[in-house]
Image (cartoon, rainbow, N blue to C red; front, side, top):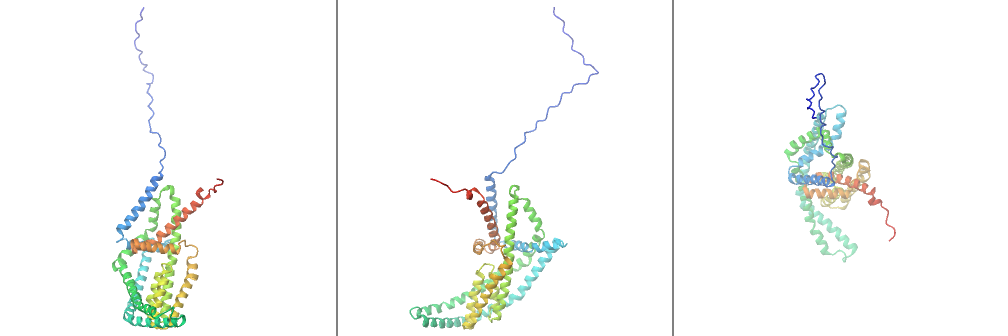
Length: 392
């Protein structure tokens, strides 16, 4: 027999309702940490380098006062930091240092520029007599040389050829000195020197620690420690070379200017200051000042005794530079070879003019530090340490 279907069970009113358990939330699986590929790192380096060179090329006409202001801020950062440690606010210390530098520069211009212009006027006025005296002195020297060596070595045609070059040489000296003073005045135009450079230098000097901290925060975390060490090494080399070279230029300029004036050279002040300023380029400044001073002394005095005094002044100056200034001011902290500095200055000048000259030494210091770092890496790598092959 078929049983009748049972009615559905009624729920017990006292029983607790059964609530279905909520489904577990579905989160995406944790992603693996992303790392930059070598191609991305190379692309970043090339992109930054290309953008920097393009910006220098595009804005080279207006970047000079800003780069000059950055150089001033870099020089004045250590004293500004010392003032801040003594309790002086950074902004007030920056304003005081910039004001002191501008006052000193203005005083130097007011004192020396009229004297240099007066000496240039003397040079242009007495240039014909200088040429005649120098030609006579050269003729006497060649005659004595002919008497000593014989007419086979020194004949009349050689004397005439040498004497004929005296006029162009002296004219070149006068033109070079005049252009040097004129170009220096053009570089420091009144508006740029008085307004733009001090204002930009003040803001850079006031915010220098903040700017460095901001740049440090942008460094890639993977290489931040290495980049910070390279930056510290570059700063050490650059500050030692630049500050030492600045003191060297100032000391040599004062020595040559005073010594040449005491020796009676009419253009001693101009030639001495020029030799000191150009000493920023190793060996070039001293050699240029020496040749210019000797030619002017030969044209002014007409005797070899006074010329030998001028030669002795430059010999003493080179001795002081080589055995006193460089060992005690620079010592072993400088990692910039003279040939590398000369190449960098000329390459920067050819590429970007005066702006390139300002940037040449910092770039040379940075390149030198990076090159030494990679050289150390190479000397510690298997590329260098692998033993030589043995057998066939």
